[in-house]
Image (tube, rainbow, N blue to C red):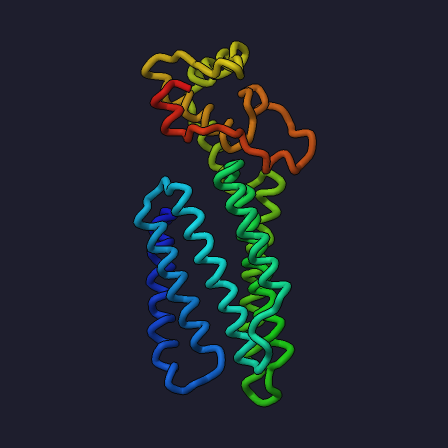
Length: 266
């Protein structure tokens, strides 16, 4: 399976190829081409920024890349609307853009919550794809080109379905990262599982310190990572069913990431 950074690299190459293809059509003065070209250039820039930042981007990188991505998606929708001879900008879309961005800043700086950020981005991307697909179906020509419009609509609706499924998975706590944690738990040796169970019974949320031997570091790292992703302040909650599905999006609010927790024995 490709790593996230490798997938980002593929996205960068794809966006640059789109910029090159659309850039060659700028002289034709086709409506919407300029916005599409700028949108893909912004997506390539945002992806490059994330790639350079590495596996642990800071708040500035997250906010900046998110803003650039939202602007690029909005430009793609406006370019499609302009291509079909409609007004490019809409007030409700601009308002939704501002609301989503403010929420992303809140869930990045004030109350860090990666699941909420994923859900917001997924919903915004789903809307953009649905908007493009609907425009393609509603304004498709009646000649032979209508099949191309239908193909575009089908592709965009399929992509929107993927984004909606991702948002629902995050909301119900069944996101891929939780599945990875469960698989990682199965690989923890039985002796270390017993150690984790014992540490759970003695764990104090007000003094989150766990003393372990060097051979048990990986097990404790799994425990802290699972608490971080599941949104619980006590490890015993990892083996309890949530009160309702939306508790899956509540994150354990901590100023330490997994690496810092490991280094500081938190």
